Amino acid sequence: MLDKINALLEEVKAFEANTPEEAEAFRVKMLSKKGEIPALFQDFKSVAPEDRKEMGKKLNELKQAATEKVNTVKAQIEAAEGSRKQAEDKPDMTMPVNFWPIGSRHPLSVIRNRINNIFQRIGFVISEGPEIEDDWHNFSALNFPEEHPARDMQDTFFVEKNPDIALRTHTSSVQVRVMESQQPPIRTISPGRVFRNEAISARAHCIFHQVEGLYIDEAVSFADMKQTLLYFAREMFGEETKIRLRPSFFPFTEPSAEMDVSCTLCGGKGCPVCKYSGWIEIMGCGMVDPNVLENCNIDSKKYTGYAFGMGIERIAMIIYQIHDLRMFFENDLRFLKQFEAAN
Ligand code: DAH
Image (cartoon, rainbow, N blue to C red; front, side, top):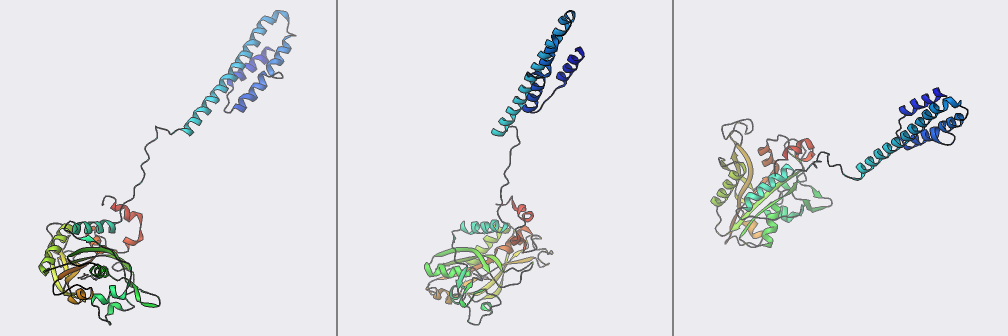
């Protein structure tokens, strides 16, 4: 019997449990009415009287050890369960802070905002027009002759079955809308999306963005235009920037010019970016053709004005040294993430 008691004592000492069920099973096995320890108390009756004292002591020790063990194991399991529940309910204040990833502006938005801002500082207001335009606002009012190639199906996306309605091919359409609805003085810029039926490549896309500018008042001169565009170029590309106007042709301006800025990379010395010419073309401009003013009910004898138009992608490509136009439209996060610091 002593051996049995010692064996059970060892078992009690070694016992461990992870669940309340395991602890309860152990209690039943050891201490319940039909358990090992009550059974030993039954056997105790047949122990010889001279051994009873020692045996009784051992037996009580065993019972006490088993009871204590069951109680402590159950208490431990409960405590562990409690703190697990608490952790589930409450935020863990020791966890590292979760930095939510913040978005960034698209590079075209960054550049458009900068262009807007430069002109807003000298009194230009922003105006917008529809992307789906009629022939009048996109072409006719702007003095495009009937047979002008830009009206050709090659360049313009017409709305099916209606040759009068097309996706605007430039934001110059907005200057017509502004002039039709306001009398001079007019100082406005019109940023927006334009569409042309072009094959997509590194240098061309069927969707791109332009900013159109228009200034109409009494006695506005070519020199005024030149000064404004010089101010723009310096604000945009740096104060050392020079500009150059080359004669050109647009149906809606007379005279017309193409404006170049001194190369932003080499400063005019010649490098691969400016193809060793020292200059980079950035916009078309000119004095608004009197026909256009008259088409929009503005007195061409009283008022003159200038207009200009530039591609936002082109400016962004120069500033950020991006060589493939398609990058702007693919929305590859590896590309977009590089503009997080811009605003
Ligand atoms: N609309 C022209 C284009 O899309 C750009 C342009 C040139 C706008 C000269 C103008 C201008 O206002 O005067 O290519």
